[in-house]
Amino acid sequence: MHYDWIGWLATAVFMTSYMSKSPAALRRIQACASCLWLAYGVSIHSVPMIVANALVAAVALYSSVARREAN
Image (cartoon, rainbow, N blue to C red; front, side, top):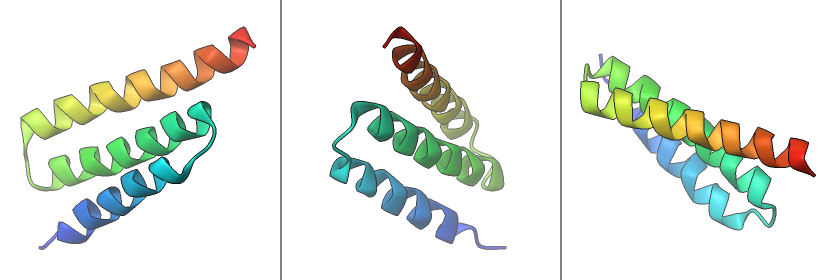
């Protein structure tokens, strides 16, 4: 089965993060894109893509929540 559409969707979501004016929103959008890239990595069985995007998503989510609580 072809899962290329997940990669294209992840690219589109990531690109929209550059339109964000809020740093927290930017990190949340990028975390969402990383989750999509993670799903794509799982679908194509790419361990480096899975690990890299799991780490990026975790850091992006954590930093968006940590900064919100600090304010």
